[in-house]
Length: 324
Image 1 (cartoon, helix red, strand yellow):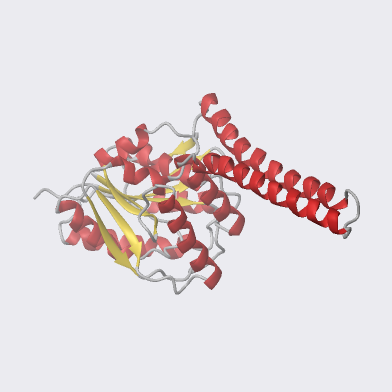
Image 2 (cartoon, rainbow, N blue to C red):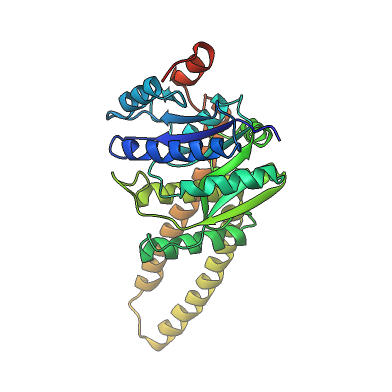
């Protein structure tokens, strides 16, 4: 077996605290795989700077100058985590297989060896799946479980407890890059690629340094992108909601008539307040849901680039070479 070239793509956004800790760990993984002749000697760690405002790019540049197996690309601004991943995948087009992992290394890099073994066994997509959520808060565990159940209810096939820690063969990566969506939810897109797949399980660790770049609002936005990018069920639910409102309105009409007959109601108050607040709120919700889909259409039809690479040390290194 001729060992293939591995590229580890690491998206980064304001990660100056954690990068000095992440690099030695990832280098050790590469060295172990190379000593076992699982990967080729030109395998790379590729950091993707997603428009960081701290010293992240300076650190990446230093790493690439002093380490032959480290490279980096710098995006012209912050395009978002999902687009940064695509930028990395598009850059490492000469690799035989690619692993994507976040720079905080909460996803266990030691299971990359298992992913590589699954690749050689025939899997072209290998998912890293958490076997526990002990490091998450009760709220996050509950909402994550609810999200996966809801997406399954909508007919969207996701791999539960699997985020963006995965291995892709070059063929699978190229198929993924062919998907033209601008509103990205890679956890939903990757299963659509097909090809033989496998799973490896690991225990998620607490963040070593820095702060999470996915606070609650970003997580909610990602979940909303996932729902609206893969299902029109919310729009269909609006019709059902309209039918429910009609039924409730009929019930309230009967109730109001009965109360009027009993003389136990202020004339016009009940029907007026219920109509204004109830229907007004429902209409705003419905308009917002429809507007979300229209906004996605608006973004898609413009066909703007999903990312712009400002600096590319990977290609420079590959063509010119460098020494330790």
